[in-house]
Image 1 (cartoon, helix red, strand yellow):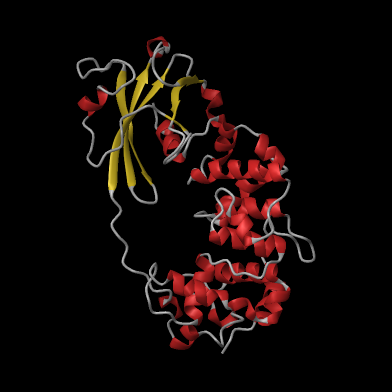
Image 2: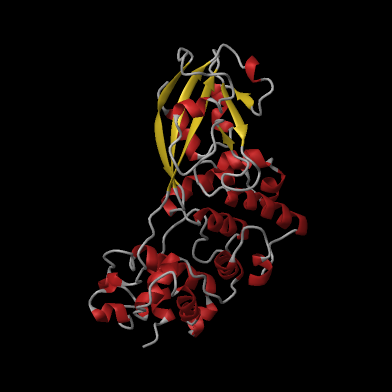
Length: 354
């Protein structure tokens, strides 16, 4: 049995979520708001994104405002959302769109912009420009796997699920309202067809769902066993002068946390770093024999997508930063730390008691 787009849209008309980036019923979607929300929602929850989205719109009401903002300012506004390459691509994309005057209206044109992949291009095209395509995020992937009771495990089954999902909007009702159909799929996955304990009794697609018929819908989608996440280690130096300023430096422009501010420290490696060895990498002369000017403030752990990071934080109290005159970095007054593009891992290091 083919799932009815009309049934889903009827349910959506009654149950749709109110979200700060979503146009109300009968309103036209704002491509800037759709794009900004979709970039922020990559690998991040709706609850986390909402305050960031609202702050971004306050600081950058138009895409031109965002395009003309300094990159470091944008990175600072993004701090805490993670996956910081998204912020750099966001800024680059804003500059390109501002230069051409508007977002492209096709999937292909959107996907040619920085930071916009296949899913995001489809989401923007369908919601903002009524292009009849199905963007496949985790919600749509889960719905599709359950509708067809796909036994092949993820991530290997992803291409197959993408093909199956593409057929969901062939119903004329979906073709007439591509944006609403896409957002209905998102809401169905977020509120009804949830990863655990799906609410099948109130689902508008319960009847055609093979996973529901199987009696164990939560079994789908099937996932391959997770690989063990490796651990990495390092030491950072929290250098503070008598006025409370902190010595920071910028990470390389590309790569993990590219362009963000950080505390100076050792390279991250596969084995724990001995304190004695770490002191040799300090920006100022420190030794095991003279521990009056430094102490171990503690350890923090931060989880990235592909590894866990364990950092030892060494607190160093200095009269002034004169000895650092030939070191890479800059002094940041304590009350200006909130304006720096500090990733969450560095915020944890700064939060440890002195």
